[in-house]
Image 1 (cartoon, rainbow, N blue to C red):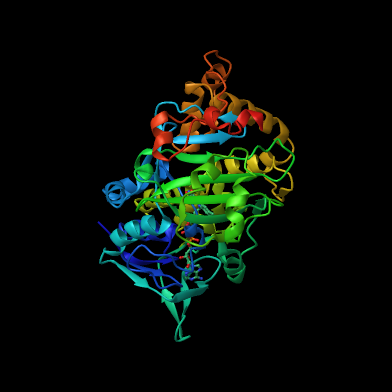
Image 2 (image 1 turned 90 degrees about the vertical axis):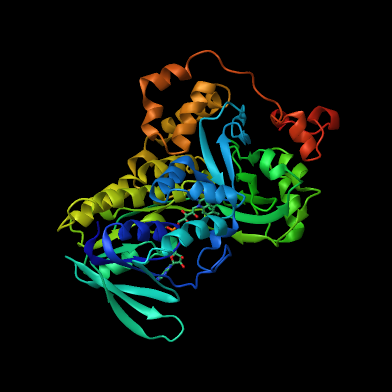
Length: 478
Ligand SMILES: Cc1cc2nc3c(=O)[nH]c(=O)nc-3n(C[C@H](O)[C@H](O)[C@H](O)COP(=O)(O)OP(=O)(O)OC[C@H]3O[C@@H](n4cnc5c(N)ncnc54)[C@H](O)[C@@H]3O)c2cc1C
């Protein structure tokens, strides 16, 4: 049952499309305003430059999408996505060594962002209650500090302007959102903001994977060690649809990102292990290198404003962005959409938007603290956060995180709980429970791994020889 009324969503990417679907469950009409033209097949577009880099949709986000849009996972799998079971289907060199590939506990969906976005968007926009206004830019909000009444928009091609009226406006315009300015324009005070900027930069390239590797070979992740007092360097090889590997290389501030094709392979030599290099040395590159600097952690606190206008909520990257290395942005946005759905199911009178915003903001707290507290441990990180968890006692927090990381790679029980938290299916506070503390100090640790845990069949699949036979450098030696 929908109620009379009109919702507007600004932005038709991940958060905006989920929000449009949620609004259409409660209002009888929804308009989605998007600056870009949206491709009618899985293709890149200008407004989502991050789509050229490796993405994983953790189980928390995937489960929420499945609940909102049943059958999405099957559609993605049928189109060539991979369901990665953690920790079985991942070979990862963490800051503290190689992770044992323990039995599966959580999962993540992996494919290109254009495929993921298109699969979800295609279903959502089929709803007759939703109208898409492409090539239309939101300029500012209309209304006052008590109530947002709509959005002032501009047609990108003709330049013509108009006001669209709404009972509820959702800002899902991403990391470039002008929300702070829009709010002060309505006469509200400036919204508080925290920034932790480790200067993360990304370079990605698609390769043709060896036959069968995207189905049977694990995803690979070689991470930096924040304890080495130098810029962190990372590399991943992710299976994608159509037999492709997405190779994303990244670094913290000062790490000299390879933006040219001739530097891409050479950069893999600077990672803590040669596995990424070994995998792509003989693989055929399919695309040029795409580079971007989009790795900041930034969080707005709209819920802290004493007065919040009715008729407005902020969702997705507009509200909070996290260092992408942890893969939480889409799941956090999905959580926000689910929280909005819950609040719209109740009477939505005066003050309801503020209550919904508080719930949406609470949903980003775990990914925020996970990413920001890890990043402040890197050299050259610019920490402009006032969040007390990131200032005074941060060193103690980091020592505890190091203890957990060292145990998690060798204990299946610790790994299970950490994986629950990483996939956002369990709250971060799980890692402070007495049960978890007991596990941390229990025996039963597996031995340290000195080389990537790959089976003979897996090595054969990608044409590699066992390490010892080729004399490759082991992680422990580096
Ligand atoms: C390198 C990288 C890797 C990442 N990896 C992962 C990962 O592995 N897992 C994960 O969960 N997340 C990951 N993320 C985060 C993820 O990409 C974002 O969290 C997610 O795309 C946020 O979606 P959004 O809809 O909020 O914003 P966006 O995707 O940025 O979309 C904003 C939309 O609004 C439109 N728009 C902007 N301004 C206006 C305007 N004024 N009027 C109209 N339209 C407008 C834009 O064109 C765009 O379509 C990664 C991010 C980066 C940068």
